[in-house]
Length: 104
Image (cartoon, rainbow, N blue to C red):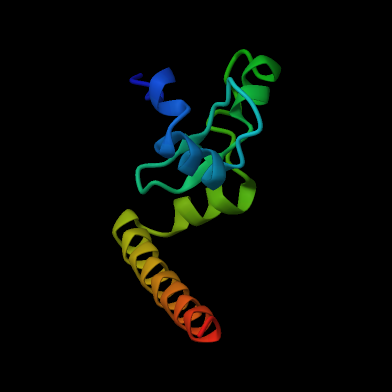
């Protein structure tokens, strides 16, 4: 399985900081699992690997997430993710606009 890793040089830079903020990285090494849509499966993989050496629970999704993935087709999950991302973007723009007005 191809595992992606952040090169050490980038970990100390802006990209590493953004990823650390996004996934709540407290130390190195950290293993974060994401699905094919870029959604976080778990940020606790580093602790789960030694606890589940046989990989029986892999990819260690929470039960609600497993049910959602089993019942909702991938195409619909992609559509839902796009809608949520659009709404998030609009909220952020609105908040930034309000904060910007408050600075004047």
